[in-house]
Structures are given as C-alpha cells and as structure tokens.
Amino acid sequence: MSPATLDRAYRDCRRIAAAHGRTYFLATRLLEPERRPAVHALYAFARLVDDLVDTAEDGAVAANSDGAHAGAAAAHLDRLEYELRGRLLRPAEIGGGGADHTDPGTLEDRVLLAVSDTIRRYAIAPEHFWVFLDSMRMDIPGSPQYRDRYPTMTALREYMRGSAAAIGLQLLPVLGTVVPVAEAEPAAAALGEAFQLTNFLRDVAEDLDRGRVYLPADDLAAFGVDRDLLLECRRTGTTDPRVRRAVSHLIAVNRDIYRRAVPGIDLLLPRVRPAIRTAATLYGGILEEIERHDHEIFSARATVPTHRRLRVAAREFTTRTLHPAH
Image 1 (cartoon, one colour):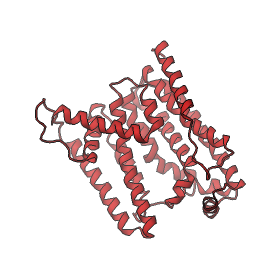
Image 2 (cartoon, helix red, strand yellow):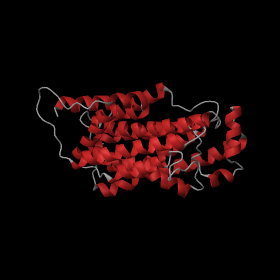
Image 3 (tube, helix red, strand yellow):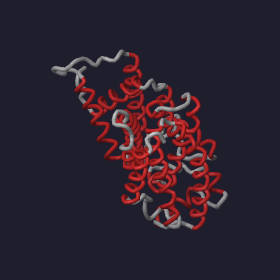
Image 4 (cartoon, one colour):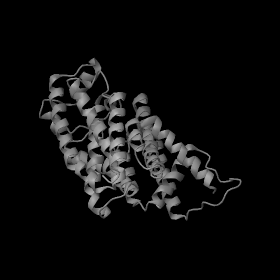
C-alpha cells in the first residue's frame, strides 16, 4: 500500500470531522499539525459507527418494526469490528511510491485504514474500541443489548463508559501526557462523559424521535417528568416547567463532571492543552445556551454562536503562542 493511499484516507477523515464536528474540528485546529490526522481518524470512526446506528434507528421508527433493520445494523457493526480486528492483527504494509493497486474502494474502508494506522502509531489500547462498539450495540433497536431508556445515572454511566469515556481514552495517547498515561485516564474518561451528557441534554427532542430517552428516569421522576410528558412536549414544541426544572438539575450534575475532569487537562502535554480547553469551554457553552433560553429544549437546538466559538479558539491560540510551555 502506498503512502498516497494512507494520505487519502486521512484526508477523508478530516473532511468528515470538518463537516460534522464543528466544535471538535475547531479545537483540533489548535493542535500541532502532526497530531491532527490521528484525531480526525478517531472522530471519523466514531461518526461512521454513530451514523450506522442512527440510520438503523430511523429505519426502525419509519417501518414501525425493528427486526430487519436491527439485524442488518448489528451485522454491519460486527463486520466493522471484525475488519478492524483483522487490520490490527496484520502488519502495516505501507510501501514506497508508484502505482497504488490496493486503494480501499469505499469511504468506510478508508476510515478503517486511517484509524487502524492511528491505533498502531500511537499504541492505543484496542480494548477502548471494543468497549465503544459494545455501547453502540445498545443503541440498535431489537438487538439483545438494546436499551431505549436508563433508570439511573449509574446505568447511564455504564453506557457512557463505552460511548464517551472510551473516546477520551482513545485520544489520550495521541494528545500525550506529562505523567504516566494511567494517571491521566480518570480525568480523560470524565471529560468524555461530560461531553456526552451535554449532548444528551441538547438532543432530547432528536433522541425522542428515535425512540430513546437518555436522561436518567429517576432524576426526571424527582421533578414529575416521565417519557409521556417528554413526548407531549415534543408534540407541542413547548417545554413543561417540570422539564425545565429537571434539565436545570441535570445541568448542575453535568457541570460537576466538568469540574472533576477539567483539572486533568494540566496532565496533558502543554502544547495540546489549549485545544482541549477550547473543546471543554465550548461544550460547556452549550449548557449556557440552554440556560439562556430558559431551558427550552423542544423549540430549538442549543448551539454556541459562531462568533463565540471563534473568540474562544482565538484566545486559546494566543495563549499557546505567547506561552508555548503552558
């Protein structure tokens, strides 16, 4: 396989990150250029799997039946895992220039090529990918692992161990640390969890459309909220005061996770800290946007305005430039 093939694969991953992960991609721009392709590859792989699961859910909802869609999606996910495991077992075969007769024929193949190269290059523990894929199976309607709601935060955190914490652990070797990697892992996992819970708070309406409620049922019940009330809010496009109070509570829970996670940024290499601080600040900004709109989560999707995203990134870029060791 020629270097041109691998370069093309990483370029495809960059395009996926730029198109779908605006906050993520902007933060990545603050990293050293040599680290960016690996981060794009990790994002693209996660996005590939997430899109596969969402497509299966959308199809199941549209057909009012989950059997065929679940079977196809689960089989596809199994093939992805099988192919990734196989690539990691085979030695890397990146040769010299010249004609390339082994160019992967699909975008999926190229994403797998880039992410397997990233795993090898940075010695990322493959177990983080298997845990991630196991959590994604919990999102496929009709599959044995499927869950459409979570009774407690403890149950939700078990899901997020694969869907979010594992992503932070995948990234850690790429970013680099000033302490042994194991010492930085708890904070990295917590930051992934914080980002994920922010997504859940922002995307309640979208998740309902796919038949899912991620917010813990017992936390919601404490404020008189259940799935039927959420569905009624979705139908009318308004947010019941009880839902507003529950969301306010869960924002406080989310911020507590950020408070535990953010100090871990100082365990990373100095040059990558601005990028991760930017991501943490911008994701935290989504919570502020929800609050700014009085916890109205059914009439609009909370997003951080472009001018603020650019201002935060510019501030961190200036800090990195003026104080490269900090």
